[in-house]
Length: 379
Image (cartoon, rainbow, N blue to C red; front, top):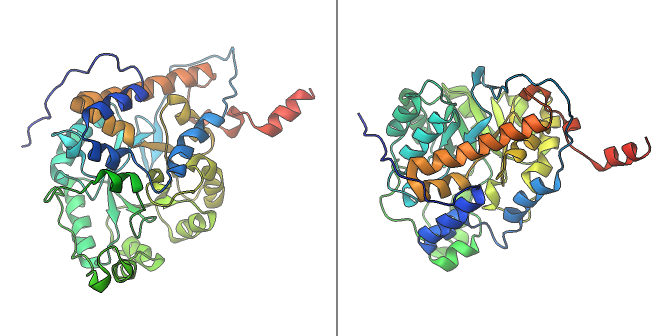
């Protein structure tokens, strides 16, 4: 048995996710803050993710009969309480001693799903025990990185399946780390022995060193390919989703292989800078798969209205990352629960104010577009 995370009181004055972010910055070590909150290069994509949600406008209807709001969503053959999941994030014990355990407990209590990072600082079994213990929980998935060692990967897959994880999320957009200037300026280095899962042997750096040309080539030699996706589909006992899909052609190829789902993601702006915001990419990804598999989206979601917009554009669920870390750093499981509660409360309010009481009614017509404005002006 694993002990429950400690209960903490929420600091006063935290009314929004932005409040959580401001308070977390005052609490966290500067280098850890840079690691959690920074993006790649000039952080253009990092900021675009947030700004793009703000540019979308809702198109509400009024005087509609509203039944009790139903937030349930359907993913991988099951119905879940909400369309909200916690994105995979590494080393959460850097934010709070209870780390991933606190996040799992809070997510389950709020009916949100959890995707545990392969770079977890807590054993997957301990996290699963807390998440699976709540009958009202959301899905429990495990994120994988492809590191060239299929034997190691299969052993890890079998381990997490035995622990109770219900699907795999393979990150496909990060064969190498992004150029994270803010993180490097802050001098962040991962403390030794913080990762709970052993990894395969790292490629030798050679004369160029780990960051030099030879080291880069060694990393690229182990980068994922479509053949690896096909192999994992053939050997994994768990459904497989791909995270990091931004191009419609990649979405079509993934769907043709029979993946269980796609996550439209630019890695929170942490890998390749100057990518478009995920909400700008989402409609083309949804169109490309033609309903063959569910599409989820992450990146910059900070308000319940953002969830409405994502689902109206065809996403079947959303993932939230950094705000969860901020809540975790502020008050452990209590802070995470508060962040998720704020999002869900805002989401329900936005649905009601748009005249919608079930997620199936969220369509592109729930959003204003330039063409709609032009047409309506002629009426």
